[in-house]
Image 1 (cartoon, rainbow, N blue to C red):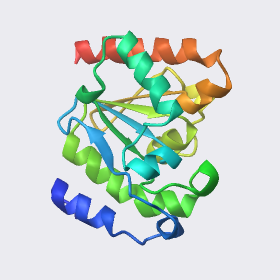
Image 2: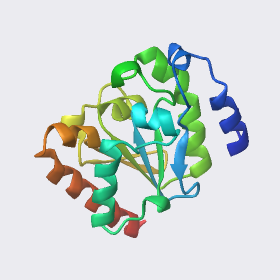
Image 3: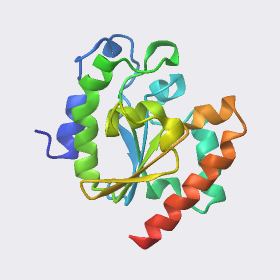
Length: 184
């Protein structure tokens, strides 16, 4: 069982549990405040993230940063991670075996951060964290409490790049996160 950040970083950096490790440049563990009340979880690193070793630094990350700034949230106050820690080829969704290989790392991150709120960015994060029975279209914007943590799913920032209409939902969901964060 992983009990420290140092142990987690060491295990992730040398991980070879699945085929994603074969072509990675860097593992992408997470970034931000390790005692954050709010944690964001996405699906997996893209090309920019693989190159830099930091989550959400590409186009989708820049869009997310703009929304956070617009709402007065400092990205450094949050903790941001992904379901998988290595880039899936061609930015495809992680396969079940790949997500399962990484899930204990994500669980360790949640246990170490101890967030009050987890924002699930997109269907991959939603299904891998809360279960296959959840769908992003029906779950988006709704609060779900599990084991003392409040969860809310919203669109992945990459979806906003493909469909501008989703930006309003994303913005409103983040406003709800801020409101709920003040109440906890």
